[in-house]
Amino acid sequence: MSMIDAKTGEEPGFLTPRVWIPFMVTSLIWGSTWLVIRDQLGTVPATWSVAYRLTVAAVGMVILAIVMRQPLKIDRPMVGWTILLGMLQFGMNYNFVYTAEHYITSGLVAVVFALLIVPNAVLAKYWLRRPIGGAFILGSAIACVGVGLLMLQEYRAAPMSGSEILLGLLLVMCAVATASVANVLQVTPKIARYPTITILAWSMFWGSVANATFAFVMDGPPVIDMRPSYIGGLLYLSIIGSVVTFPLYFRLIHDIGPGKAAYTGVIIPVLAMLLSTIFEGYVWSTLALAGGALAMLGLVVAMQAPKPDR
Image 1 (cartoon, helix red, strand yellow):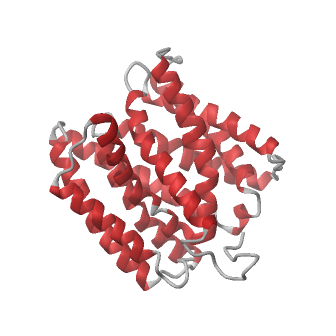
Image 2 (tube, rainbow, N blue to C red):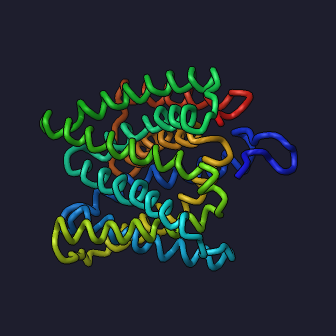
């Protein structure tokens, strides 16, 4: 799929509605999911919470494909590609994130995940031959400093021991790695020839199968929490946090490249902290304010490049 605007013949800029609207919607929704994930941990093992989320999301994506009249039939080679995508994006990535939240705060997980901009840009450059613009490099450097300050703030605030924090950070970095490979992989011509909804429906299906199998092996038969907050959170994460956002995010990857699309991850921890301020009484420290400001500045600078990081 081309990133050239069919009407203008140019690549869409960040300020065009087709870019900034899905960018902000995705960032806002995913910024809120970190709070919801925390309530999904406890009675139900993380593996089963992930399996439930992906099962509901897969059903929702199939329904969306039918409503939007997107084809669900794929050829045999694409079956293998969707299995790989499902394992990376919706299997390993999700399990790493959910497990990490047993050891570190959701805020720290969100902040570390912002580093996705780096592997996404590097993989796009060396795997897909998409150059990285100077403005993107400068903006990313500024944003990474901001992320570093936010990380330091969350590290200081974390009530866990040093070994727990290190284990949690390792798990998040594994999640970043698997997500990055999946992000770049789905832009390759072999996969991009199919509609985004089609790829997502199959990837989520295989992801749900893999997650359910993994959950049964690791934690035994299914366990469910019937609390309204758990069920409501599960539906929010599945429908709003997955079915609504992933088509928007994957479209961003096609339109502005994996590096810039990953900037949603830079905005997400700042939005998560804003939401925490509203709902949890989070108090902003000097480090958090400075980190948030630099992250925003990095976004502005990176998006000024005359051509996206294709």
